[in-house]
Length: 165
Image 1: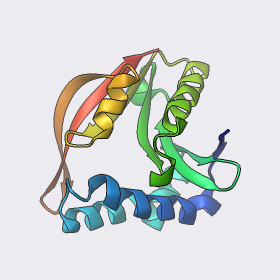
Image 2: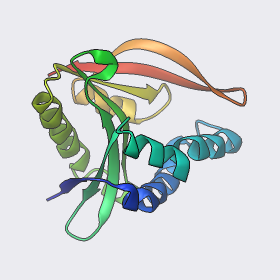
Image 3: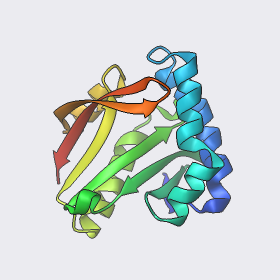
Image 4: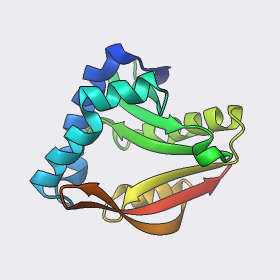
């Protein structure tokens, strides 16, 4: 059984801890060490997370099992003023994978999206991320291929995936 609760500024350290564990495993063979470090600092610095949480640019939620926090999500309803919920971040600790938690989390995100009048879910995934197959199993389809410049000469090479709900 998992629980999803809204995160606050007090949870920034926990979000950073999970990102620092999951990112090297998720992206270690995809990105250079320099890009990995740059992106972690860009996206998960105290300043970046505080701004996103305070301004509700993304709604952050912690994912917990009976014992501890095992992951987090960052979502945005009404993405680009459309009936879309954008999943900006979804990370679960490596030891939880294969236990069905990811599927449960997506079901909960879908419920939240429907409660906020969304008719679709959208996410970006690195084109070389093994999670791509998991998203396809959940019914997501590739909508677009994008290269996003993030500074320092680095690119995010993503697929934009979507799913009607």
